[in-house]
Structures are given as structure tokens and as C-alpha cells.
Image (cartoon, rainbow, N blue to C red; front, side):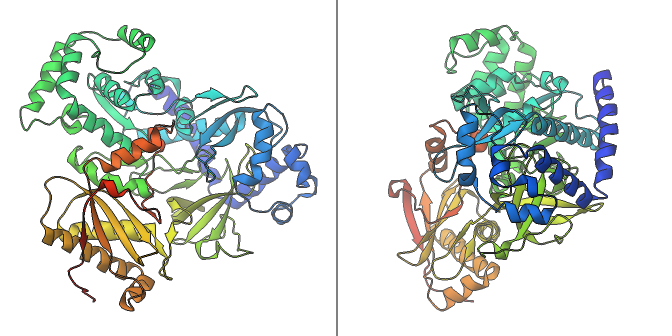
Length: 557
């Protein structure tokens, strides 16, 4: 471990000890934080409209401020993005993070110096705790893949960009300098070029940590290597970047100064291909100590594909429950996806999942929630979100001292309902995993659609490898149906009563899912933010379907 790493770890360790002590008194910490946020922002437009001057307790806060979504805040955001001060916070807005909105218009989420400092501290703690568990974490180069932190400016001149870019910017400078992929790569617009360039540079190095929020991005990177392996090896040997890589001339010129001929590394990579023609990270990065990415929610479905590329012994740690709105947990273990609730950074309220449609739902503090229970999260931040319905469902996985360990489950309202079955996306994810195991079949991508007109579910699947026989596809469909009956008693009741007809399996053309992703990404959506909607009532394009498999008969349990 180098001197810089040792010094940084020493400082972070002392800060961590103070932060950790707060986890013994979470409610007191939360109460003080809430009153600090309210007191500081009494003179703002939002504070005046909602009588912040009359708020002295949590009960007062709930009385003066209703739970609301982004549309309630949009008028204030419009003023803020045009440069008006004191709309939501007394503290100036230093940037906005940008994310998709339910109305189709992007949401701009304010970032203040306080919230940026919170990001920086939680990021520092994540690396510190990872280093404690993996002492050789920084013994080689790091590879982090993010979107640009700054992508433009509002009419008022305030910059806006990505949450992942903000988190990366919050990393210590020595970590950014150790990245095998320079920050300029985040500016590359062409995704294929970005993947190629990232891995062309990274394959020259001994990578000991790999991190990016979305596991799909990691898979795209390693797949890109094999699609372009001979070209990458030649580039490494010659110290160049192929002309086929779609780069702006100024970007190409800037990167050229970093490149050197490396025939020895090229020869080593060539030797790895000889076995079966495939380049795998477990072979070209044999000292990889840890990977960091999201493990929960729908994006976690892709983790099963890691076994094809990475050594089983390589640990994987969740980066934390974070969104454009805030960074909300700090994972300190490689197990699971839960993290310590960031009680000194944001104020949290929890609504029991079953009460989300209620006109007056129960709202609980972090001291009132129970292990194993699922809740909708309501968020108050120092950057100007007040009782904000983030539309996320989280689960209490346990407690660290007295503070909840929270894991992201899924976006809220991820439920379809044809005839009272109330099917949840998690049922679909679990059923697909069980069906694949039972049918001994690999499904590369999938999603489910509630076909209200035909009163049935359609499962769209893109298969991995050789096309299975019709009999095995029918088996997969039957296993899906059977698993859903076990997972959801109301689904079973509706199927048994024939109010729900038998599901169908739509086998999609090769590349369907990537084309679907590209259609979303083309308008400017960032690749690390693409999250598939695995359950909805929106059907797929008929032109993408190869053929449809139906149940041979009704196999009722």
C-alpha cells in the first residue's frame, strides 16, 4: 500500500469512526438534521409557501408539507434553473443532476455544496471500508466507467449532468488519477466507441478494482473485448487507436499522447485467446480484488451472467442505494445489496408498501421500521427536496447498531393487474430464475407484458446460444406459470378460475434487447442509467418476435 493510500485511509478511518458512532442514535441524528434543514431554509420561496417558520417538530413538518412528487416541485425548479436564488434552499445550487421524468420531461435535481460534500464523504467511506476488507484493492490500476458530470447548462447558467459523474467527481483525486480510463472518455458520445476505447486502454493494465453503477455496463465492456479482440491487441501492440473507433479529432489527439507501443502485453493477450478464442477478465486481470456495482432491483438480474467472465472468488460489493436525488446508503459488506442508511445526510420517512394507495398512509421514521418489511421511501434532502416521493420500494435487511440496513427492491408501482392478480415485477424476476433452473435453459434477456385484452401474460425472451427444442420451450413456459402460482396466491387463484388465461412465450430475434436499449439511449440517455422495465402493459413490436410458444395443455397443480 502506497504512502498516499495509507494517509488517505488514516484520515478516512478517523472520520468513519465519528460517523459510525451516530448509528447508535439514529432518531436523534435524524431529528437534528431535519430541524437544521428547515431552519436554514425558512426564508426560501418554498419555505415561505409552506410555513417553515411554524415548524419545530416532525409533527409540524408533516402538517405543513404534504408528501409530493416532482410535479409539486417543478414550478420551483423552473425558477431555480433560470437562475433565481432562494427558491428551494438558502444555499446556492451548484449544479443539477438530470434524470428521466414520469411525464417525459427530464427532471432536474438540485445539488448544493452540502449535498456534494455528503456525496464525497459517503464515497470516501465506501472506498475505506472496501480497503479494510480487501487490502490489495489499490495495488494496481482502477477502472471506473461513468457518464459526464457536466453535460450542459440551464438558461440560468447552472451546469447539469449525471449522478454517476457527480459520484465519480466526489472520489478522492488519487483514485481518479489511478483510473485506467481517463475522464475524457466519459465525453465520448458513441457507446460502441466508448466501450472499445475504455477496454483498449484498460487491457494494458493490471486492474485490481472495477466499478460502475450498472452491471449491464460491465457486461457490455467485456463483450466488447471479444467482439474486437484482434483489433484491440493490434492497437496495444502499435500504441494506437484504430481509425474505426468513432472519435472526435480533438479527443483522438488528446489520447494519442498517452499511448505507447506495448508488444509484450499484446503477446500476452494473444496467448490467452489460444485456449478457446475468448478473452475473459479472470485471465487478463487475474489480480482483480473487487467489483462494485448495483446488485439489487431489476438491474441485479444481470449478475448471473458474471460467472461466464469473472472468477467465482472475485467479490462483488453494491455501490449503495443512490439516485439522482441523493445517495442514501453505505454498503460495508460484499454480501447482499443492503447498506447503512445515511442518517446524517438526508431525512427519511417510510410508508408500508401495502398502504401506498391509501389517502392517509402511515408514515414512519427510521426508528419505527421493522426488519424484513418493505416500504415506500419519502425523502427530505439538504438540496431542496421536501417529503419527496421517490417512488422506490426498499426493504429493511437488518440493522447496523441501531440504524437500519436498507436495500433497494424496485421502483414503486411496478405492478400489473389484469383481473385482481396484482403481479409484481419481483414475482416475474424470481419466476424466470426458477424456470430457467428447472428447464435447464439460459435466457439472456426477458420482460413480461400484461395483455389486458386477451387476459393473459406474454413473456418475451431472447435466448442465449443454440435454439432449444419446442418441448423445452414449452417446459420453460410451464415452469414460469407454475412458479408464479407459488409466488403469488392471487395469480394462482385467477389461473385456476380461468380468469387469467395461460401465458404465452414470445421468442425474440437476436439483438432485440440491445435494439430496445439503443432506442432509449439515442436521444441522450446515458448507458449506465438504462434500466429495463421488466413488467408493464406495453407489448413489444411484432416485427421483433420470431415465434410464439403456447402451453400444450393446462397443467394445473
